[in-house]
Amino acid sequence: MSRTRKRAALAVGLLAPLLLGLVTACAPTVPLTPAADATNPKCAEIIVRLPQSVVDQPIRETNAQATGAWGNPTSVLLRCGVAQPAPSASCSTVNGVDWVVDVSGSPRYVYTTWGRSPATQVVVDTKLTQGQEAIILDDLGNAVGSIPQTKQCTRKDPGFVPDSAPTPTP
Image (cartoon, rainbow, N blue to C red; front, side, top):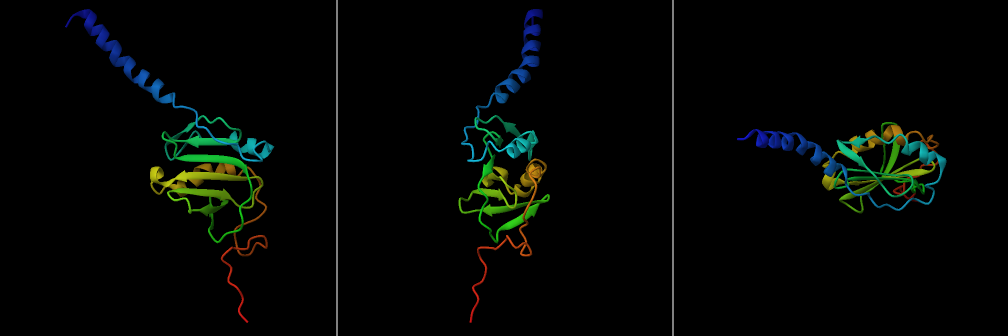
């Protein structure tokens, strides 16, 4: 092989990973709709604390205020400023943050914070995250936890009345 070809081969070998990195870093912006209360200053506190990755999925750029997205294809979406969900028996705590889960749109699960205003919604595509929902919520806990909690999802909190409460019988 000639000296010029060796240099060209070396240059291609060194530049190929760099070019591949640039191409994958140029994932398109994730289009989202901002929540009704996205301009709430508390949402800004969440957004500046968002992790650069969740379950090894890199953060993506979004086109809406108070939103976040991770993965390519997108596997996790976040919107701050959504309405507080109705109390539900499907409330659980992860990393000190209470979440109400809606699995009716399976395989997309919708988690909404309970007892924090404004509320934050996280949509997880369970086909892409393969059972790592608790890890995702844990990864987001520091950011979402920046909004103070005023209610808890326990039966001891007077504001928490599960929608599956039994009807008294005479």
